Image (cartoon, rainbow, N blue to C red; front, side, top):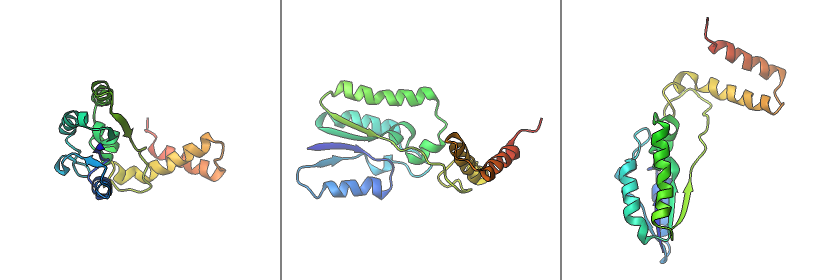
Length: 171
């Protein structure tokens, strides 16, 4: 059985480990794009090359396991920090449909992650403004969630109001 696989990013846990596991069996051949196309942290994958590779190789495969984060945004980190237009994102999303239309026999499994809100001031894997505002954004979203569920305490409401006041534009 041939399986076409596009990982979430270039990290070994996503790129190397699934491949190594596939080699433990005689009946799975796992195809993956060249590692150099996968990008690294804030440098996204070469999405166009990977999509071309998919269309060239998918016809021989029974399954395709595809990362939406990689094929739309370039990788996991870029899914958080991209500046792509909605048109570019939708065009890339349409390729999943196109793939299924061109190769109807393939069993297509697409996956993506829900971006987390990091609870610290650091932009290593997040937008640059996270260096300054990251913790406050995280804390504020926690308060909004608790408030929407009717579970916010008075102390939390006061802290939420302080954060709002801190960033409210001065008129």
